[in-house]
Amino acid sequence: MMSYSMTRWSASALFIFLGCSGLLNAQDPSTDATVVNVDFSKVIATTKPGSYGLNGFAAIDPAVVGDDRYQKNLDYIHPGILRIHSYNMMGDSKTTPGGWLDEQNKQWDRGKIKAVLDKLPPGVELLINVPTWPDWMSADGDKCLVDSDSKAFADFCADLVRIVNVENKHHVRYWEITNEKDDVYWGAQINNGKPPRIDDLVKLYLQCAVAMKAVDPTIQTGGPAAARPDHQDQVRQFIHGAKGQLDFVSFHQYASGSAKDSDLSVFTKAQDFGKTSAQYHDIVREDIPGRTVPVAGDEFNISWTWETQDPRMKNYKGAVFDALALTSLVQNGADWTCAWNDCDGVYGKMQPGDYQLRPSADLYHLLNTYFIGDVVTTSSTNPNIIVPFAVVNGNHYALALISMRSTPQDCQVQLLPEAAHTFPQSTPATLYEIDAQGLHQTATTLSAIAQYHFPSSSVAIVTWDKPQ
Image (cartoon, rainbow, N blue to C red; front, side):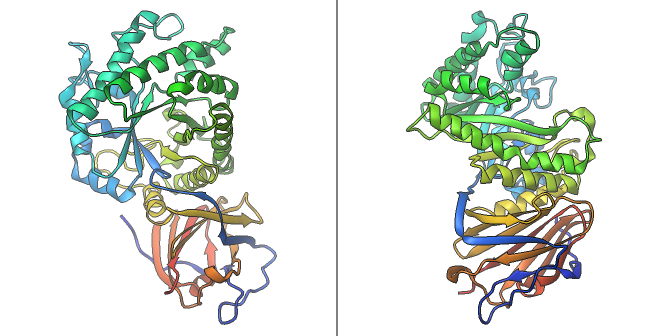
C-alpha cells in the first residue's frame, strides 16, 4: 500500500519556526516562499470519526464486500462513516450483481441484503440511502412519485429498516430518504417554467420517516441529498417543511463537468465546498433553534458525470482535490463527509477487480489516522497556492500542506510560539508525501524537515508527538 523513498530536499523550502530559547531559531522568510502560520492554541473546529468518510458504491454487492482484498483496503482507508448508496441496489437481485430487489415478488431480497451487511468490516458507521422507489411503483409526467404509491414507498422503506435493524440486528443509525430528488421536484420544474413541488417531496419524506421510525424509533432520518445545494431557497423550504422528522441535512457537490477544466479551476472550487456547510448550518440554526441537526456533505468529487472519465479522480491530483474539499468542509462545520466513492472504474479510491489502492486512499488513511481531534487556526500568505490544515489531539500533532500548483513551490511554516505547544528541534517526526510518484514516508525530526520543497501539485503531511 505504501511506497517508501527518501524525500526531496531543497535549501529553500519548509521551515519550522518555534522562536524559543533552545529551539529552532526563526529565519527571515524568502521573498518567493509562501508563509504558513499555525497556532495550535486556537481551536476552530473538531473532527471526529465520520469527518473523512466514503460512499459505498461497490459495497452493495456481497461478492465485493466479501473479498479479503476489499475488506483489507477498506480497513486501511478506515472511513468513519460509509454511505451505502447506488441506484444499482434498486435492480433485481437475480440479474444485477448489486441488486437488492426481488422484483418477481415486489419486495426486498432479504438474503442478498443480509449477505452484504454480514460481510462489511465491523466498526464502520453505516448510512443507508434509499435512492428512489422501485420500478413497480409509478411516477407522473414530472417523474415524481404518484400520490397513490407514496404509502407503498413509505412501507417499502420501513421494511428495509426492519430487515437491517430488527431481523439482522445491525443497528444502522442513519437513513437517508431518496437521493437528489431536488433535481426532479424543483430543479426540473423550474427549468420547465413550472412551480417547484417542494411540498410534495416534503410530504413523501415525512411519510417515509414516520413509517421507518415506527419500526425502529432509534434511527435518524435525513435528506434531501441535494444535487443542487446552491438552490438554497428551495432547500430552506424543504428543511422548514420536514423539520419535525429531520435529523440531518445532506447535500452533494461536484466541481466540473469537463475533463478539460484546469487543475486550478477544480482545486479552487474544492476550496469553496465548505461555504455550503456553513450556510446550511445557518439555515438550520434559524429554522430549528434549540435542536442540533447535523449537516453532511455526503457526496463529492471532481466530475458530476462519469462520462468525462476525468483521470484526475484516480491519480494524485484527486488526492489534492480531496484534501482541499475535506479540509474546507470540516473547517466549516460539516458533521460528516462522504467522498464518491469506494471502488469503481472512474471515481473510486480502489480500482475494481484487484482493489488496488489509488492515491486518495493513502490520503484518507492518513487523515483518519492522524487528523481526528481539534482543528486549529492556520493561515497562508498565498492560499491559492498552498493551503494548510492542522489538528492536535492531546500530545499528538499533525500538519497538512496542500500544494495546488503544478510547478515547484517553496513554503515556510511558522509554529507560533506558545508555552504549551513548543518542541525541541530533536523531536521525532514523520513526513508523508503524496505526489505524482505515489506515497513516500520518511522518518525525520522537526529540525531536519526545515528544508522541504514542493515538487508540484501534492500533499505533504507532518506528524509528531509532544515529548513527555
